Picture: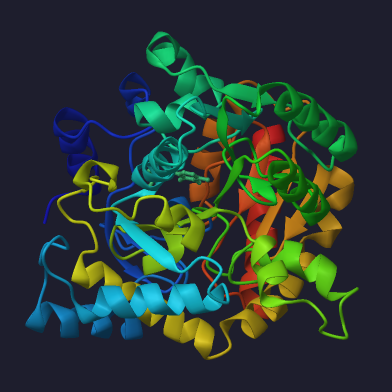
Length: 447
Ligand SMILES: *Cc1c(COP(=O)(O)O)cnc(C)c1O
């Protein structure tokens, strides 16, 4: 067996790591991971690390989750892949039907992509093209929020406002409108909506869509805001005839306490509508025009993304004219193995995963409460918990990541924001372990 040092140095030579300044790897050698077991990753020396960021937010039920592996193995024995143009298959159809049903049919048409960025590209193209097909080709501008993150291909990067990812490529990008973002720490949600109103009032004839990360701007440093902002944004985009894209790539699949984060927006009205007088079309109107899923949808096993959209958008492409269709594809579009994994993920939610998550989130709340006096803006939405570290030393994130390893914790802060986005496997002992490991790491880094 190769030693961990060997594997790390071979990796440095042969593998160009993502999101990494390769020159820093001498100080920050990549962990050589041999296998995963539940929330734990085990390195080639047999040391274990709790996967507190769920391997970039994808892992929902831990590593080597048996029902997921069984679903993939069963699919592997019958049909690992077939193209989705000219063919179809049960796992894709079933997945599309089940996701549509979870929106009450509001978003009943599902386009498959391979990763999050491709889903963003697909939604932007579909929005523009649907306006064009309906005789409004001037609606070709995109709107995103300040500090937003929607992926790193050129189209997705054009609606991303995180400087470290964007600045080097800025000359290549489309010019999107970047509007003030809501942030509960600043209590600025009304102001942010007013800024959006001003832009839409002026440019709605040129604007195709607004794209947002519902409730939490992840890569910005787990910036949280209220569902009321989203409700206001939905009303504004309806008023001005602009599409709304909900990028739930990070926050979908139960992360926030409901399957779709958008359900928190619908819940605002359910409180006033307990007599159930709402018509089906009123209910459909409250959903976004596009909703994107990826990351957690396969529980961290295989790459897959989905773009859910409305009858209205779908109908704009319906024609005898081929070029009015959406002629977009990726080689692995709707891969059956990935769809089988996603169906197994949905099985978990059908069997009450959200109830379990509610309890798990409460365990995290209780375990981390004692940390509040030492940190700033301790905040939580469902299974995402974050806090800021005031007066953090330079290279804080790197130092925290390194020191945490000694406390059996794999965690990568964003700037001065430490966050947990763990697999849905939090019992009392695990919550206590996490709070203790985070607290000890803070001691080490701030010492
Ligand atoms: C991760 C992420 C993306 C991009 O997904 P990739 O699979 O990394 O391309 C887009 N939007 C949001 C909100 C994300 O968190």
